Amino acid sequence: MGPGLITGAADDDPSGISTYSVAGAAYGYATLWVALLTFPLMAAIQLMCARLGMVTGRGLAAAVRIYYPRWVLWGACSILVVANVINICADLGGMAEATQIITGIRSLIWIPFYALFILGLLFWISYKVIANIFKWLTLVLFAYVVASLYAHVDWRQALAVTFVPHLEWSRGFLAVLVAILGTTISPYLFSWQAAEEVEEERAKGRTLAERKGATTGELRTAHADTIAGMLFSNLIMYFIILTTAATLNAHGQTNIATARQAAEALRPLAGDGAYLLFTLGLIGTGMLGVPVLVGSCAYAVAEGAAWRGSMADKPRSARKFYAVMAVAMALGLALNYAGFERRKNAVLVGGYQWPPGATSDLARHPPNQQPESHGQPSECALTQIFRLGHL
Image (cartoon, rainbow, N blue to C red; front, side, top):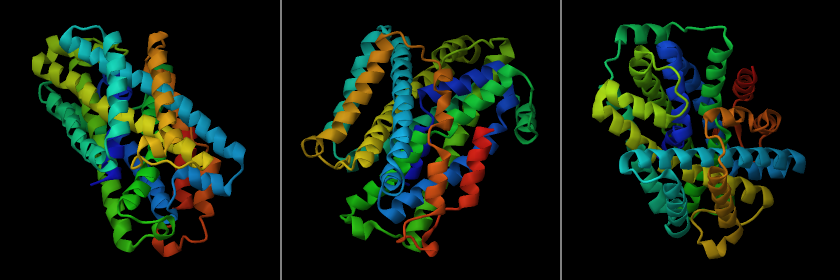
């Protein structure tokens, strides 16, 4: 397990948990079926990003820089960075509020603590250690599976809705569906997955020339890793919606706007166990999600500008790369103190960040060094994914 598992787990960050909590509280079990829809979409597009990184030896933005105009490159990178900064703001705020629930210390004190702590990890710990930390942090997401055991789920109804989709042609329900799609299929994951596949090869001492191309065995390993990560991500989404549906919605508490409100509302309904698991899960997922958001900003900008930049480099040898990390984190921190609304609705643009034309063209016209037998991405699948996303 490697970049695919970490990428999938990072998708369930505090702002994503807020979205799933809102869906479960407002509409009960009615949105559980979406997990079956988003899994193949996530898996297909993340597999393409993984293959692009492995076969070209470059990250996603670097490939776009080489083959497309600058306005395509920087338009995509700019939208990605703006959305990531908003998400960093939401995740830092969610972690701080969860810590306030447990400690009683105001969240405004915890926000800079988490920001500096995460930057310290990214700046001063080696990539190999960080990758291992991320892998272990994925286990925290099982807290939401365990929390469902306290929730007294109506499994008969839940399973029925899971396999027989329920739709309501109302503005609220459709907005929740778009929110789930925008949260689940997020462009920062595209950039991160491709970049981390390259990092894995760099860690083996391979040069750019040696990184180009991939063996059948390597592609199979990446396929298994990515499928496992996306399955894990959607499984956790399923259990968060399930837990909030069985507790909050079932008891008439449908007006939930944040994950913190969901955690607080769970306590009298499902007990201290579910409450603590839900709250600690918010902190753990933030420790995984925020570094991925910050890192994907740095990779996108560094690759686009052709700067030296890798999490395996020390800050003194990749100053611009780490400067982007610091600026992204500082902006997310500033938005919290500016009173920016941290609801996930503010980042629904996430589902539409990466211009579909550039990415689908990249899949349609891969680099000359990329042979069909080495995992050429499927143009048809990518095109259909983006058509569905825009609909």
